[in-house]
Length: 206
Image (cartoon, rainbow, N blue to C red):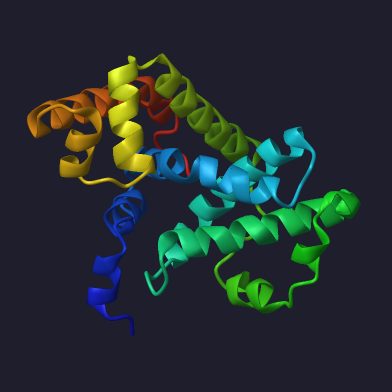
């Protein structure tokens, strides 16, 4: 049984719990936080830029569907990393494009493959679920791009870089109250863009 104190170490656990409870906005924040890191990871395995984007989207779809199996016995990103690596391997082998993969990744032993096997979702994604995940990820990115610079910088430092409010205050040379306000406004703007898509998914399972 996992020690609850271990979960407390993972700052992502509250967002995981909220997502499992049905708050898809929480998953949008996880996507926002880790999308670029996952893209960089996959980009080290794959040279095809378009394929990197497709595998990244597939990774977040698979992770979303398997999230109820995540028990917090590892950091969320460690769990997501394993799904990303195995999704990339599987996609490339199926497409017979393994020549684009760095040999170092395929030379690894199968430890990651077996360790994630129990956590990976089944391959029963529907076209609707795939479209929904892609739309949400796209809207989150677009919403970020549309934010005023000071709001975007604040939310990136908080949600992606993981800085504390005090650290952001120093980095942006503004009071902590201003930092909190900017992050709140950024989150509200992103949520406003994502909400119509979430409303469309009411009553549907990904």
